[in-house]
Image 1 (cartoon, rainbow, N blue to C red):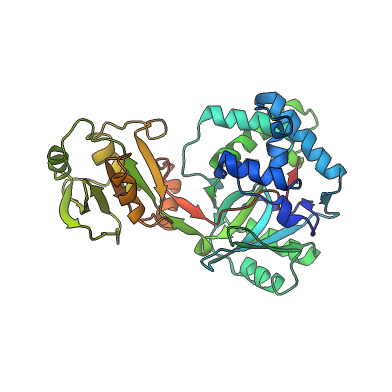
Image 2: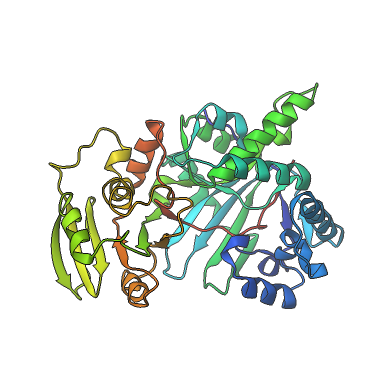
Length: 412
């Protein structure tokens, strides 16, 4: 039974939402961040980058305290308001390709993460977990929801369809040409129906936000241990999530670019590849992968089609069927000596929303020696890996929708 609760969101006023909301901090270049902060005093970037005010890089606990201060200033200046009653929030995004995503922003339970009701499919780094836990402990809010996905549910779908017929609280378009909509659900009957519908769902899956989920759980455990009156209903027992039905999730691949051939000549490299793949040279014809276990490769001015030799590679679990893992096990690790996909500087990732021809341009530039195109994983495969308690290699999936920060804020 998934515990998915309404909450009293802190939100920008309607007239300032388009100015406040921002992408995740890491998605901006330093130039982009400075440009937005120079000309937009309402951007949430001013809160999460408080050192900008003093033209100084600030880190650690000092930064966390300043983030808290900036947040309180936004509240004092009435840029933010807090809803009077606990609510669910229907959030819809229509991207520039006119793909539409819709789901519910709510408070999800940290104990569900612990008890594997909220399942993960990626490993987390302990240092990052603890760093972000300390950040959360000081700032005491979530501004970017974790992206979760659940099996399609008719009750929730009907409620969303009913709600979005009304005028939204927010409707704004970004410079990325994505349009965002938000509706508040505070009617008791609808709240009860949504809560009951989620409680009938046995498993919810993390689509994006593994570290944030883990850090929120660590914080809840720490607060529990230091609170002698702990009941389990305190706000620190929950974290903000955007829950989207599985059928509405979009999964792209992450392609791989490698800087060298580990001392091998082109011919030696192709000979070693032949052990694992049927290789077809395609020249300048781009062989975009059309099914699982089919890869494209660009090397020395030519594209190649690579089909896995299933007599050579054996599947023993869901992870070993994943194309990102197959490429690691057959090429990256044994042939190119790339053992740690998180830290090796010889590998770079390019998400599949970019045209595969970009692999060609980046290899032709001389920065990279070889590039590989993959077929995207399905949600069924991601779920199967999670069900088996396995974790995918880093950058196995690029998942949409991508959410804006500070549309709703969860305080604890």
